[in-house]
Length: 399
Image (cartoon, rainbow, N blue to C red; front, side):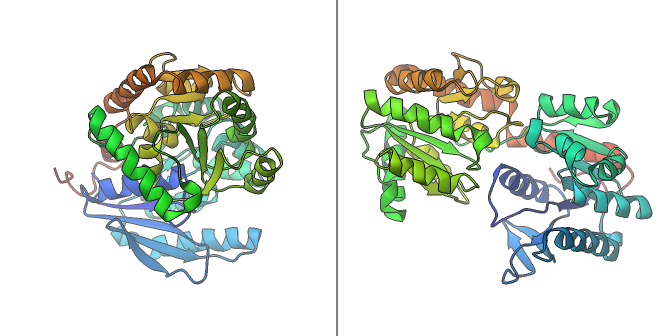
């Protein structure tokens, strides 16, 4: 069992997204079981300190230029150099994404006999496998990635893509995304938590104020076209025709934000739809919400969806393969056809207009996460995998 693990991820806190949150949680949980966990990442801003501690985990930021290609090459060189300097203190390297980071890490591992495990992120057109087909040097990077000791697939869709792309089946390991599970709440506790969360949001930013008796739906994630947010805004214009008191918060940042802001103004939806911005922790948004919406065209296994279900929220999500892995239609929430605005609006209204049914969906959703997507299970699966790929290093993990 490796005792000293380095996790390589080009994006990390304060950059916020599903992969970044998953990496942070996994690193902290592994650090409680191993001797040392270090996160190796890029220094995106020269004003950032070169080293910090994040939830008890050492984070080392490597210098990179702001020039795109030069910055990537510089970052790859920095990974190789840092790992080489620390080679006697590294038992295993775990890399998020099958991109330049992975190429550099595997090169180090081959030279020094250190196993490297990769984690594929995203599925479909926005996933790592597709990136390797289309990016400059993608084929070269793939040729090295297939030699990794193991590749973690966070969803069945990603697992299928890896097999189709030529990765060895015996080196692909399905370990789904996972989230911590908050304690269950009684009805009274849930109402109190909702009121407190809405008060906290309003105190943080008056634009986030929502009356306690008004329905609130939340989306958390990257603000981009493939998340189906244009369709969600179209659907919300229909929702407010039936429920003028209904509110929607879009939590996150991304390239579609400016366009959506103009749309909301031109369509006079600013009273009902808020672009909340990015937050390190979305817990208050989930506690404040009555419903979670994820109308993506494509997904891997959405961490945002798991977080919402763990918070006991009913969900309305697009009917895509990755979402079907988690959500049973009519049990944990509602599945709707991709880019179908009318069906999306109808499903949202159904849940907002049926609080009792929504509560049943939410309770079932939380149980689904508890059964199959808990962080404890995810950590145990990673420790088992790490022990398989380097059984001779270190000793057993701490209980």
